[in-house]
Image (tube, rainbow, N blue to C red; front, side, top):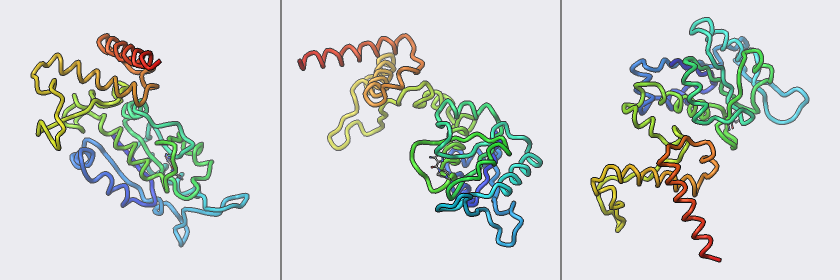
Length: 252
Ligand code: 4HQ
């Protein structure tokens, strides 16, 4: 997997990817990652990356030429990325499905916006797609780029030690995760559920499935519409919805 990130704050990107499983994958070469300082692609004495907006108004807009030059350089020196992403609240929502798609692309470039955003022409000039990590406003695209690189990288074989844990991750099948417990068996008066100490593997598996479904039903019911459920999970979900309905009935 290859990533190229273009930013005016390269140290912010480097710091965000120095630690943890993704940091190790970059250090070991599983992930080929380069950060590009946008100011290296300016040609004026002041190394300007922004200018005043046409039509007036507050704030500044990122100049198109340095961004286009940066992508040209990436194409010449690193190959043609399968996706060029501009992080922006106007973009298509970044989801686990999008992370899976990008992991299949193998070479992704991300352009990080600052100020009011980029000159609109950049999108068509470099063939970029806009991607949003959620409905809130960041001070710049760097944190969004880090989110995308992290979520995509952990899908690359070898990045997360235990491939099984990636497959079981929350959202890999479209459900929320179940609760997790470790020792001690009692902490602050709170006990670990008995079934987890019972040694009954089949029951443990069923309990975990049911907990994941119950939480999803309670907190994010809309996820169940597109979740990939097996037969056992369908049956458990029916039990859960039936017991919810009977609770509602008994309140009448
Ligand atoms: N910004 N998802 C504005 C975001 C954002 C988001 C990045 C703020 C770009 C110019 N990016 N700059 N939400 O809020 O991706």
